[in-house]
Structure formats: C-alpha cells, structure tokens
Length: 321
Ligand code: COA
Image (tube, rainbow, N blue to C red; front, side, top):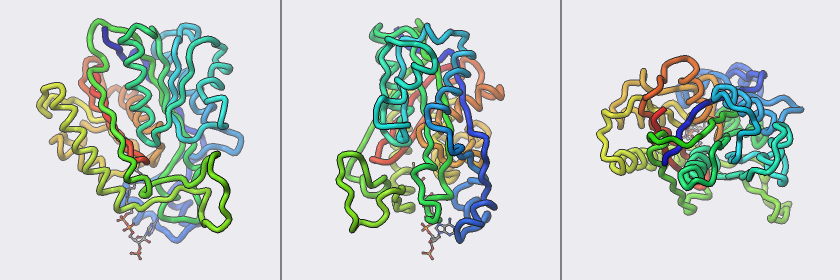
C-alpha cells in the first residue's frame, strides 16, 4: 500500500508588495534584492486575513482538483509556523470552515520544512491503513513575523498556502520521504519568543525573525545537496531519472545550486520565488500546484520535493504523480 497525491491546490493573498515598494520602506533596491535572491515581488496578507483563511482557499482548490467532498477527508495535517492562535490548532479551525468534525487535525511546526514533514507523516498514516483521504497543507503568514525596518529579512518573505489530497494507491505515489533536523544551528534563523518564555525587556528584537543570512545560505546548500544524494541512493536511482525538481523557494541561488547538483536544466525546475518570495511552509505545495496547473508537470512524472528551514530542519520527498 502506498499513498498518492490525487489533487493539488494553492492560494496567494491579493496584495502584492514589489521590490520598488520596499525601496520606500528600507534602504534597499530592486537590483540588490533580485541579484541576491531572485525575488521581484511577494504577496502579503490583508489585515483581516489569517493562515486559516489562506489554508481554506488552498484546501478547497485541492479537494476540487481531486474531485472529493470535504466529508471524505479523514485526516488533516497542516504545516505552519504562523498559526492563527496558540490553540485550537489551524487544522481544527479549518474543520469548522469545511464543516467536518471527527478526523484528527494535526499541526506541524518545522519552519520552512513543515509541509515536507506533514506530507511524510500523512504518507505513513495512509500506508498503515489509518487514513483513506488526507488533506495536507502548508500555509503561512510569515510577513506577520517580520520587522519591516530590517532590510536583511523584510525583503525575503511572503504569504500563501498550498495543499494536496493524498489517497491510498497500489502504485507508488509518495515513493520515499527523508526528514532531518539539527538544533545546533538554532541561533542562525529563529523567532525569539514563544508562550513559555517570559518577556525580557532587556533583550532587543523579541518579536521579529532573526537571521544570519550568509551562514544560513551555506548550511542550506550543504544540507539540501546531502538530502538529494540520500534520496537518490535510498531509491537506487541516478539523478537523470528525476523529471522535475520542486524546491523550497527561499533564494534563486540556492535553487540553482541544487539544480546544478542534479544536472537538471532550469527548464525542469519549478521556480516561483520571483513572484512569491519565501512563503516558508507554503512554498513547496505552492510550487507543485503551479507546475501541475500550468501543465508542465504531467501525470507519471518523477518529482523531487525538498525544503530547508529554521531549526535547522530539512527534508525531501520523491513522488510520482
Ligand atoms: N538591501 C541592500 N543591502 C542589503 C540588504 C538589502 N535588503 N540586506 C543586507 N544588505 C547589505 C548588508 O548590510 C551588507 O552590507 P555591508 O557589507 O555594508 O555590511 C551587504 O548587503 C551584504 O550582506 P550579506 O548578508 O553578506 O549578503 P549576502 O550576499 O549573504 O545576501 C541574503 C544576503 C540574505 C540574500 C543571503 O545571505 C541569503 O539568501 N541567505 C539565505 C537566507 C534564507 O534563505 N533564509 C531562509 C531559509 S529557509
């Protein structure tokens, strides 16, 4: 028994923030942002929108693509770093919207790797026979965690959501997943506060993402390169077998480095970072849905998904659509 993706969906909030808009906020410029990151614009949630709103749109589109009704879903796993509230989790809030009650609703936080973690867990539920129709989502309002006066981070992130429906299949859909984390890097990319931490007025910048960009860059390229090798070796595959790379969309230069390692031309890499920035947990399912809906990714394609995020966490999934 395997699990297989039978529908994808995604959603981006309406408001667009261009590099030119950011030039009015901080001392930056379009040329610097494009050349360092590949980002040209990003979508930003409206004041009254939340992660659950974005997740709902993406979920409805994935269910529609899969041709299923909400009451068929018997497992919800949502990856996010930016839940609407501490509890109930976003999966429970989403159940209310979708009018379904009963199935487990799980929220996973592994920063930008959250969707790959969620997909891996949902795959195991299905392969064990514990679920027959899983709704797996990556949804994020990361711009809510940004200090808009910090040019080193505010140019990088955006908001959005992506979702897939997983069902049991006799043929491998999810072929293998590979998850990792190493907490020794926790001071390179983090959000400093959480509910169990007492507010300390002597510590500056407690409510915005903190990042040592160039160090994150180096570890990301090394770990993602390693997980590509691990995924190919686990499946006894040569890199030439991969039809499509659907990478985490953090930075164009990281994406190009991984494509080069796979000897894949950029024409076989789904790139959305220029239009969306880094949408964290949403980036991989957003890119997957983009490639599926514009017809580039066809049924039967062998696809490598990969992600890297704060923690550090990183992971991959080898899938056949
Ligand atoms: N506009 C203009 N200048 C900027 C800037 C901006 N938005 N942000 C930083 N700079 C400046 C810095 O202050 C620094 O100036 P200085 O030399 O006078 O001190 C200079 O640009 C170089 O900064 P540095 O951080 O070394 O640049 P970089 O080449 O490493 O690029 C990143 C910065 C963030 C684009 C790059 O490190 C990166 O992409 N890292 C990975 C980040 C990431 O993907 N995080 C999420 C992982 S999931």
